[in-house]
Length: 92
Ligand code: SF4
Image (tube, rainbow, N blue to C red; front, top):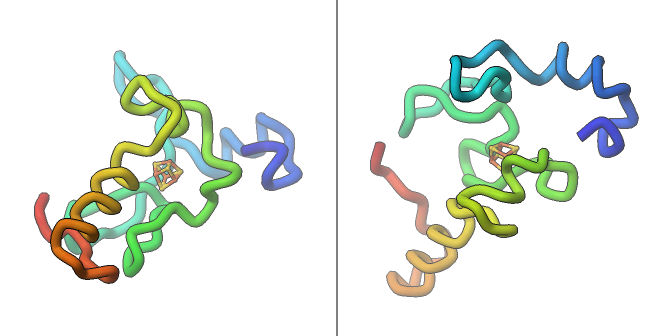
């Protein structure tokens, strides 16, 4: 993310993350989300796409223990199955 935003790691940490819990000490800041109450500040709330996909942090690249975004794969699968290229999950 630091490279993507041309910032120092410390600046990225301060600007885009907040203290988490024991299992996840730092988390990305959230913003309001009609489906999940809040979600990552970088999630486009209309398209449900990551707005910093090329610069997303390692935890996002690895989740859930693979080098692909689980939500993206889920969305791609559902859009194909429902034959609706604009389908967006409405569950929470
Ligand atoms: S991939 Fe990571 S940075 Fe992008 S929207 Fe999801 S949680 Fe946020």
